[in-house]
Length: 203
Length: 125
Image (tube, rainbow over all chains, first blue to last red; front, side):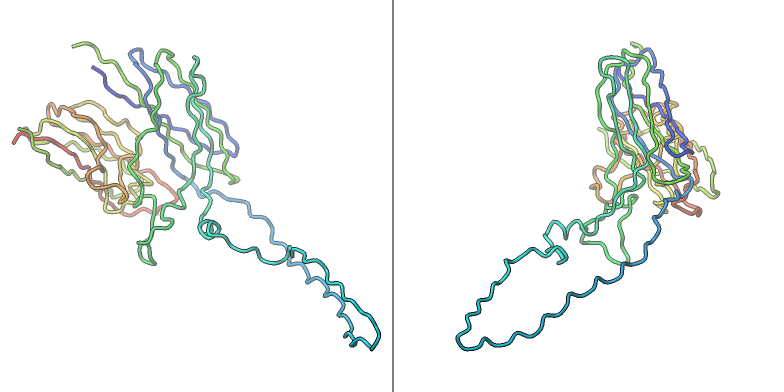
């Protein structure tokens, strides 16, 4: 008979660029590692440094206006050379449909990076970027309006663990979490859940 | 013949940081639990602040500090698939223990809220 069991690892991150190393000791009857899940809790609003606002540049001087051209006199041969058309770099670029789609996307703030490692041939078997939030969950949802907005807790899909299949012969799993948040003094908790298949005693 | 039924058990969280453990007993006619689901009257508080431990028949299925959001389903999931599949768990003595902890999170401000544990069960018809 095989049963699943989950190990919860809690990491409290309090320093910028903090590296948190942990080890999970698997039980002797661990058959294989079947999945990984993670989540986080924010204990303090991170202070994101904002760049100083630069004063606007003065307008460039206008080119000198050309004197009005006189009409050619009789017998005078005047040929006008028109300059070749040049691409104007200051002109606004034309918008493509893909630009229109990307206009409202917001970047998801990155908290950090998680890696799990086994000391056998599998080596690093799991890597994940842990994001602070999902900012585009309601993107292009036609049902949204001023009163009905999309949030992670209303529109999330069902949560399943990230499936992996790794034999449980190696009794120790090492994990490394690196903080990569842009805030000065982060304060958050990352939870990692390691699912294993446990061989129960024969009845 | 087994018939599918849904059961709901509620707890009320009234203080920030509160831990509450409650035991529920199911009918004797219920033989197996197929899935679990967590909801609340204030979804955001449950999503960001909740962690819980769930035991069925004195066997731990979700450990302490397991986040509630991992057992929630949004409206993007069809109603028939919203339960977290446990397989067919024998209910044994029929006792469900829910140990819930409210954890402060800066993305929400606390207000009293209800946590509902739904169970997808099979009972003898």
